[in-house]
Image 1 (tube, rainbow, N blue to C red):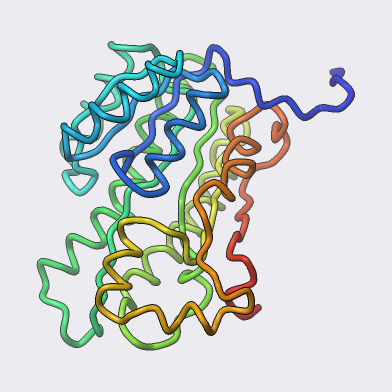
Image 2 (image 1 turned 90 degrees about the vertical axis):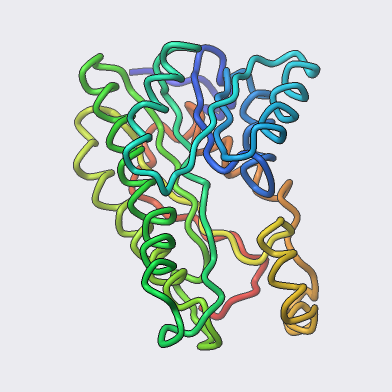
Amino acid sequence: MTFPLPNASQDLSGQIALVTGATSGLGYRFARILAHAGARVAVAGRRKDRLDKVVDEIRAAGGQACAIILDVGDAGSLADAVAQVEEAMGMVTILVNNAGMPDAQLATRMPLDLIDQVIGVNLRGPFILAREVAKRLIEARKPGRIINVASMAAFHYPGKGASLYAITKSAVVRMTEVLAVEWATANINVNCIAPGAFSSEMMDGMRSRIGDGFIEKFPRKRLGDPAQLDSTLLYLASPASEAVTGTVIKIDDGQSPR
């Protein structure tokens, strides 16, 4: 096997990407970045008007995209969503498991339906989607990339609520590691990005509840910008990371203790 010098291509031409939670925040950015790199992108989320907006923006920039209405918490609809992408664009070769939801509550105050919802969206749904994409790739004997989005909450919890969110994101980290082992022989790379506090719709909700005082406690006194994740996303999705699997990349601007 030979590689170019340098082996750092981010060309995603010919790839089909499925991005969940693509109507806002990081997912919105991720979908456009993958399309800019040449992938055909299926943007998935619950809000059709926002999905259509992302698709229009990608097409206006010269890319190819389609919208898939999807609630990641609805486990029964996930296999069908993957099939819809395959019918519209071709077999998914890049999955970005980005959709997630916070709980913002102490464990003792969470109603059972919210517990089920958080686990469903943050863990069960991503696991099922990864399985559905991998199953098709294995049957077709095609390589692929699965990129899970966790959180620095998986590694550090200050104890002021959102404990279940932290638990599910920790599970996503472990899911990344074990599925990477299970699918290594099939040439499916499974990796994870663990962002810190970045500007997003979810972050806006948190700021409205508790204010911005926490930002001043960060070493660099700023929130991350989603654009600062571009290079890591492209690295994990592209030929440049051919030998990288089961890896979690923490991106938090030094916000959390190590």
